[in-house]
Amino acid sequence: MKRSTWIATMCLSGAACALSVSAQTVKVTPLGGIDGEFCAQDRALIFEDPNGTRILYDPGRTVAGASDPRLGKIDIILVTHMHGDHVGNAHNKAPNSGTCENPDTSVSALPNSNAVNIAIAKKSKIVTGSEMPPFFAAKLKANGGDPANSILARFGGSVTVGGVRIATVTAMHSNGLDPDYIGGDLGKAMKEAGIAGDVGLPTGYVLRFSNGLVAYLSGDTGITADQELVVRNHYGAKLVVMNIGDGFTTGPAEAAYVINELVKPAVVIPSHANEVGTVNGKVRPGSKTEVFIKAVKVPVHVPLSGKTMEYDATGKCTAGC
Ligand SMILES: [Zn+2]
Image (cartoon, rainbow, N blue to C red; front, side):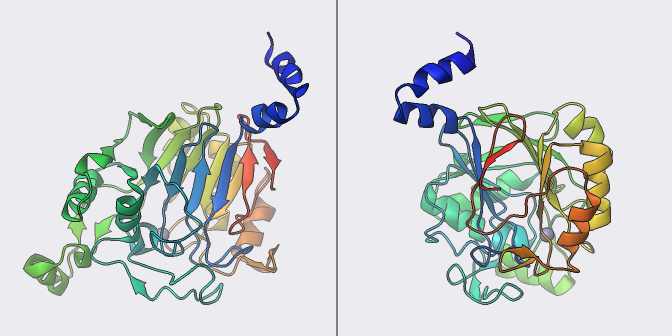
């Protein structure tokens, strides 16, 4: 039976119809600083596969610790690199604390990190590349978790966890581990010398969900040849989460070049803007987010915190955009 015929047949039975159709989309929910806005510190996204697997990408500082009620079940945590705004050296007291420009991230997550604290509470697997897995395994073990829940996906290969294929790809950035995560005499000596720990290269991710959707999560990066060679030519990413903040990573012009000329996806979600991107849910005139939207040739879906967007295998948004 053709799939369209199968769905039509299922639709005769009402509720089952709704289930069979919606079950084919990947749900993307931003966990930002302020509900309904795109704010300065926003990085965290939850991807929910049609099979129910829930993935938290770069929890950063806007996820209000492991008890944030927006988290729900978290099966997998992805961390592109160890900088505090991605792994989470501190975090919000609660969702919506502080302002869009200056969230109240006064709760320290050192020496563990927000990512590790969430992983312990949710019994999540942490999938990272480079030399990051041993760091996370040691942190899990030190806090009563299972070090085997720290899983490696190094460049070139992939691992399938919860039915989602996860690969890491090049990110041109840095990845020093702040000595505050190390602590003790060693951490103190490193801090005094101004030296960071070495946990290998930062990464981006390519995810293949069970409905066939392929998503590229850029992480902090400059323009790389792999964005065309690997992300587009090999993996064929249709949905991109692209960092646009400038200074630390691609700015709006560079990010637009990556989208228009290198990856050429069906749709893009900007991230890591380091600004007030929206006011009352509307893109702020003069923002980097606006510059990016104007420069990009494909639909841009601004990640408004708490608003779920759904994507089919082709990267078409079927709800919430
Ligand atoms: Zn960053």
